[in-house]
Length: 191
Image (cartoon, rainbow, N blue to C red; front, side, top):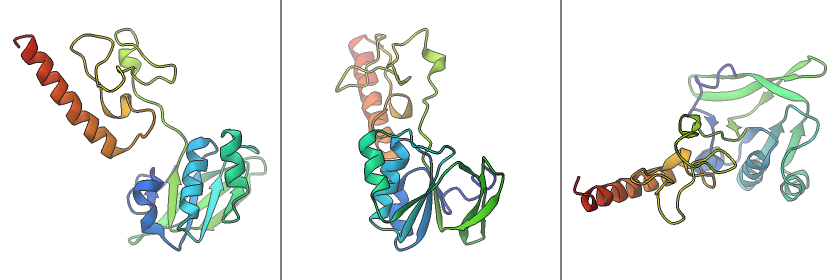
């Protein structure tokens, strides 16, 4: 959406647990309607003044339990059948977003200090689909408790292998583990 790149890390975020505390006692927007969006909205509601979920449909795709938590949370409101057209702000950061109703075409400006994009994750693993084993969700399969893939001597870490946390810190940690495992494998094989 227009303004997303411009305001990334200056009000636009993809991680409520990473950046939520920057928005304590402010109004924020969450974009999405799946489990990720509902998890982010509920988390943010603990510290933000209000959380507005902007969703392109008239119902959520999230699991029933996640829907119930968000729909019953008094600090979360929903803007249905809508999409953010533009994130607006100034040199200090995000000020809000222009939201378009996809059924009526009407636009409105919502004030907010933060916009959390929570529209899910799709790992970039197509490159490996004919070489390495993939999980049903598209992430690379790794042997539990390791970074070993289905191919001897190939290790995976980070966003292509972590379908649970999808965080920079876990990517860095597993990246270090993969490097250690690769070094050990090379030593064992005289490389």
